[in-house]
Length: 198
Image (cartoon, rainbow, N blue to C red):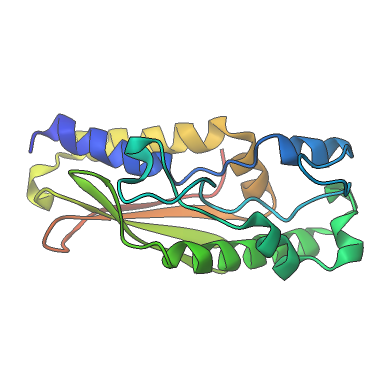
């Protein structure tokens, strides 16, 4: 597999790592009604993965991981807190929401693992470690064949993606982080990195 293909496969895997809270969260931030819900207020920090129908081929075919955000909300917020604006929570409460949201989203995601992203990339697991979500990705390549420059490009692209997304920046501002661990077809590590701020 060429270095270009390895990088493209890795970047596709990163695409599923972003949060996609959409209009519901913008409505929550402004105090408007949630999309599809008559309640007002906030939701917990975004799940670490994009919501959508689960498919065997994953995001490469337009699918993605399926996360029940209502179950996540019920797990992480009592009804009174669900109507509060995010700005009314203390830093400790925000961090607790991040930790709870990560745990619930990872629990749901693991029922769909492993998920094939494309012919070269498989998301093998998503693990919550407190405020950090860890994405474990297997690439159909040999670790020795991935040059340092390619690794640097993958990490730079992941950071640019995280910092361009308001939902991921918000999670990081509340104490959350995203960690990525890439391994080759034999399970040998290719690279690991963590994003905790922009």
